[in-house]
Length: 118
Length: 116
Image (cartoon, rainbow over all chains, first blue to last red; front, side, top):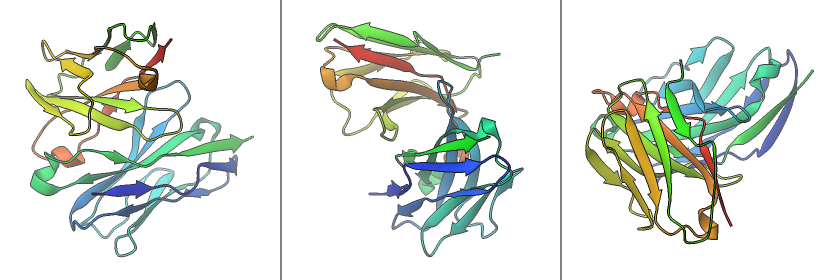
């Protein structure tokens, strides 16, 4: 079974600085998808960024980028120029790509709570 | 312009008293999911519907049931809530296209269930 581990329960960053959230996963599959979701306090979870495992190039979405190391099974999230609105719980998630992902489900890590200091 | 709506946001029930949580969506998505998220834990998938096809996770207790009367609505029924069922319940949807694995899941704000 696949597992996702986020080893940092809490992180803190100064506004305008850069922070990296760690995520590792365990799988025997070669094709899969990885995601970072953000859950702000009392608001719904939203997708931040996603990565297809067969793509070597790291995904980037504005201030958010990932460092995907397939051999190491690592998928960290870097937030540049941190803003107060980035304060949230961040979840790393894995999904199998078997049959186009129709049979796999999102497997979440336990999350990292990010605080942003003004 | 809310896309995934969950009612109520907070629900209090008594031990053993059946309770129903509701979810509706304006996205016309084929897939609807129910997750359970306990404090400081990862969201855990309970089941999902692909259109009318119900898919139960192997470790979802029988106490949890679901109904999807139409595309827009999906309900989570807890037949006899126990203290251990107190959690945030998240509803999510996805389009259900050919590349389902890569699709974004759109989450509702959740319903926090308290069992007295």
